[in-house]
Image 1: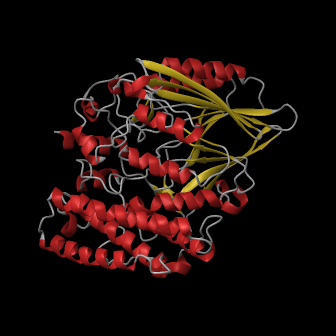
Image 2: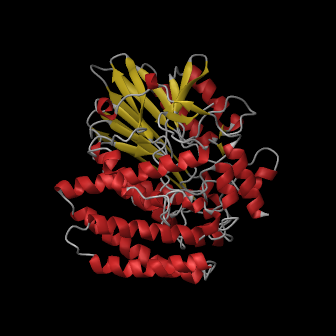
Image 3: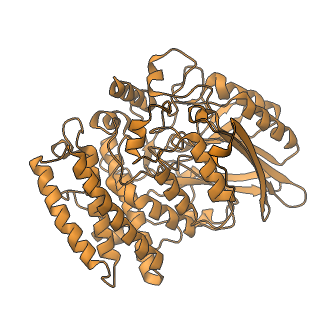
Length: 537
């Protein structure tokens, strides 16, 4: 029954097949042009645990319906490296606002790797949790006495909503908050200043894991312009729920949520936002941002709850002259008029096609420009030299066992995908070994590479012979090999300078770019997705 619920959730979240449309070049700018922006908006990396165990939604049916239940193995191992290189290549002076989904399954390892990558940006930045940062597979919070499946998928280190907020406070602001020292709940507040940007945050942290869905963090940034003019942005936590979101809620009438389906904001957070917005009156520009998009009506399938966020936002935006709302979550990007001249700008993802972000320019009168930066051709971002086409020899081939979309090959993963996780781990190991071998100019890890290749040859033979493919013992044998090879790759990157670092960064970016492109072409059943995206309605 659980898998049935999950498949139904995947169907509802994905809706009908989104129409593939041409990208409007009038709303996009180059990465080079974006270097002069004042604010960057990024979102949805969904860093995936590279050494976990199988979980029910990781199967053929869920992926066929949603298209994002499973991603290419290269995404799991290379995306954080690519993201860090991407961040280092950006201008470091703008404010960077990340609108959530740093993690995927919602494991502590995933968020740790995401925050490690965020160290690539030395300018001011903030992060707000998305539905994948604290809820199992971005959808569900299980009772604390029934988290075995979640723990198992995360190798015993799951990440609930409170954990996500605590991790952010520590990694971004150096605030150490221990849940064990909290009696019920605790309010944690702070302020920060970097150049012309002033920031503040208020977090309500619940110690009871069964109340983690009620933890939230709301943030405010003030950007000083010339003279006394300023821009105010209030960043909401749209994964703030009255009742714990669960997969099974899809079968229940009203009032209960699934985090990947519906966002929510409770009154206590609304009250803080209202106070901050009242103080923002007179600013040259006032914006609100959050992870979930808005709903057009009570019947809209996916977005911020109509009676738990969207209608309140509409009244609030009108009362306090808020220019618009910036969202993420869809992985599509785009913009639309929502009501009465107000605009919603959606931020594309950095994991699915089209890879992208948004750049905002400010002036004395407020907003001067807010454009998408999409990486839909093989030109690499600023700071990552060259083109992916120039390095086509690095691209894996369709006959390779670990090719980007072969996880969809039923001969390998089974008619229902029952061998999916085992296949993905073998493919991840091959991808890691290939990267270490290519980037290890001194041959320091040649013995490791040789040993892993011998193991891989046996693993592939077993896979084709269907021997031990259902054994968790085989998966457990893969874990230390994945971890040792990942450590070798991390050491190579940390030691790389000059041309070696340039090569490594381009390698990681192009692997992520090829994985996203090939997966989109497979999902959308088109020959070439360059210049195209799924329509955001």
